[in-house]
Length: 550
Image 1 (tube, rainbow, N blue to C red):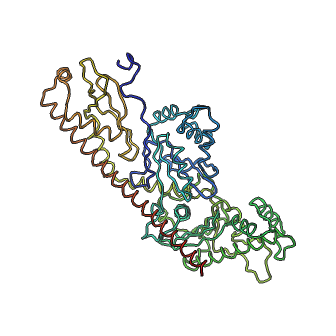
Image 2: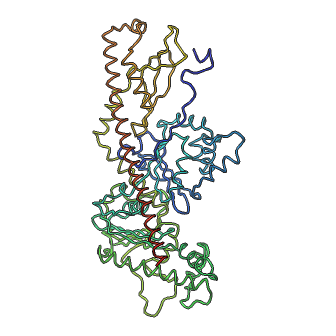
């Protein structure tokens, strides 16, 4: 009534989204909710950002849509501001920047079919979903891209979780300090697909290999420059040698596969560069494979039916064949080796067990090695994240579900009161009473929204802090006498309701305090890391100056 008469809602203008932290995932709270229709995973790498949309828990979080964009920079938002109409805010520009990065189908999921990237459309689509907030899981080796990622999603109701290596493997499972989260995620995918033991090569900006033994414990691995970085290093470190692109590399390899291996004594510069780089990588990787086989034991010559698996397989997107989250129940009988990354095509050809020569073989070169098979997987990190999510969802045991139900039952139905300055009801009271009717669960109690329906049939969503304050106010003022008369309630009934509201407020206060303490710890840890980096940087600078003087 007040809104119709004055044109002003008693709730006031929409609140600006608070600049929350970019928290590390904490389980089981971070696990996707059963009602989520889609989950997003994002990998912020050194040269690109890789995105994947996952299906629900019912479909084991299998990724079904993949795309790649350039690394994110502040210029992405600046460009959106510069190309937008005059008067566009930073928040609106961030949504436009996000819109450009999304494929059509996921753009429609966020903004609506053929709709503009506006905050109104985002909220409308979010409210239409069973779970309003979208879960986003981030693996990052690029801090700047991760910060911009947070900015462009700031106006979309979502839960962003930064994944760490410890989410995939514990110290007891062999993870060591400094082991990249991307390697851990890729290893998780490899173990899920092949079982134990497993070995995975990841050909990206860096070429890495990582292995697990028969018991699923990390054996370790190695890191070197990837093909592109090697070719770039040669070109940048010399004045006359050319840079060889990925396309040129694949073109020369295709010629070698046609029966003309690259000659060891090359007669042109590009082939001379490629021969050495390819030989170096092939020989090193095959040596790694031999070492791994010697430690975990060779594969049996045939399976239980007497059949060998194909020597080279390619895993199609969405084709997780092993039991996600249960790699320990699968044995890698054929010693399948997983190859992934942007240079997976090159590595797969180099490491094929039948050893079809890309580089000319010498008279004493060994032949093929049938003691292992090779499988190429695209987007392995996203499959590793899918495996992690299914494991964490399964870890939600019955006690977790019971606790969640108890929490919901203790909040829904509670009476609240909220003061709206300059607005009053027909009795001149500026305090409006209402009831909590719905909890919009996000997986993190601190980020839940609570729908309150007021006695005048108006409603709004409250944050956990706002709800705590509303519960406390009701515990002080209770219901109005006129309301009790209509509801046929006694003063004693009102006192009981006030005590219930006070107890619920205390329960929410504990959740708020726990979150604030965790937030304080994360900020302290970040500050400690920053100080350590500053100290190390100063020490290196002093060492350099001392060396220069010497």
